Amino acid sequence: MTTAPRTAPVEWYVDPARWPHERAEIFAKSWQFLTHESALAVAGAWVAETVAGFPLIAVRGEGGELRAFHNVCRHRAGPLVREEAGVCDGALTCQYHGWRYALDGRLRAARDFGAAADFDPREYGLLPVRLQTWRGLVFVAVSEAAPPLADLFAPLDQRLRDADWSGLQIATRRRHTLACNWKAYVENYLEGYHVPNMHPSLDAEIQSDKYDVLIEGRVAIHHAPPRTVDTIYEGLWAWVWPNIGVNVYRRGLMMERMTPLGHTHTRLDYIYLTPNGESVPAATMTLSDQVTAEDKWITERVQENLAAGVYKFGRLSPKHEVAVAAFQDWVRESVGP
Ligand code: FES
Ligand SMILES: [Fe+2]
Image (cartoon, rainbow, N blue to C red):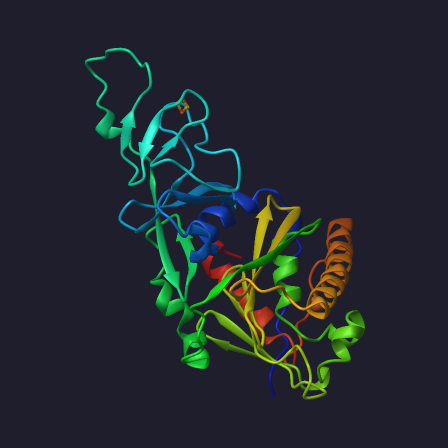
């Protein structure tokens, strides 16, 4: 007979002291999804994002290589760019006082700084961040502790085999902000138990009673047989530690990044990739918006209830919430009980 593990304690979701540890022990030490290669097509093209409190920038160099840096000038910590994406003229120029950095991160010119015998510009290059790609998707990691990206994604590679993602481009994006702790959203993402109650439109597409979530490495693979052959939910639906959703559709995929904004809010970024950037079918977008609105409503109510102070802990279903239990184990391994 299997057991029903206890849920994580309520403090995980409401204690502001936990977030700095999660940021250092989970987010700094894991791969974070940034963008798709096609958004960095030419030399000088850059993409900037703040991921779990780290302002980062990725840029394509003159020789075609992709690099990532902290988007933090070495002078007095100004940002290198103002927008989320663009193309620069061969150098990144700090917005504050105009220091210029080569695309490989070296400080090329400290504008009008004045002569100083003890200042060596070679010691003030941009601080590098690891960057690796998987099937055209660009990931960054702030610390050396993150395992090779290919190892993390091996369970998905096995399933995708020779799926051709070469012509994919970003077709559209969606951004949602949720008033809940990031773990409340991830846990909701990791089980299909709530689908019949919370998502009638999704329940009409899939056989929720056969919904299954399989753990392989640090990947959770969802499986729910479609009710009809003509469903948009054919494909692969997965989650990768600690905050990446990978939803593969018949034509293209949707990458979902679940970014903590402190301990009380979570930002969701959905990035839709299709062959040559062709538009995403309206039915897909409508269902996605609907399901997200339902998940936003429930996770925000759960957060309010956790904060109310009556709930201490609950129990996890051995049938439906195995991935939630695994996720809570991994969080415990990283940050403690
Ligand atoms: S902070 Fe970047 S040039 Fe001053
Ligand atoms: Fe949901």
